[in-house]
Image (cartoon, rainbow, N blue to C red; front, side, top):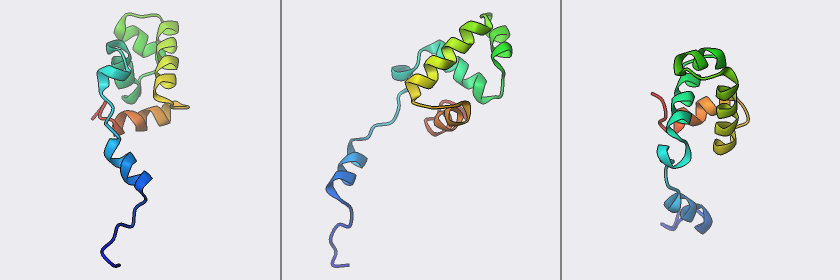
Length: 88
C-alpha cells in the first residue's frame, strides 16, 4: 500500500533463481520417448511394441522416470510433462 514489496525475500529469491527443466538434463532420450508415449495414453505393452523393447524394460524405464521427476503416479507424470513442455 505504501509502494513497498509485499513478497518475502525468500519467495522472491526462489522465483528469480528457479530455472526451467531442461529435457536432456533430467531424462535420457529413451525416457523422453517413453514419457511422450505415456502421455499419449499408450500402455506399457503398446510402448514396448512400438519401441521394440520388452514390457519389463518399459516398466523399469517408467519407474526410473517417476523417481527422477518425483512423481508418484502416471497422472502426476503427465501433468509434470505438460508443465515442462515434454509434450504438446
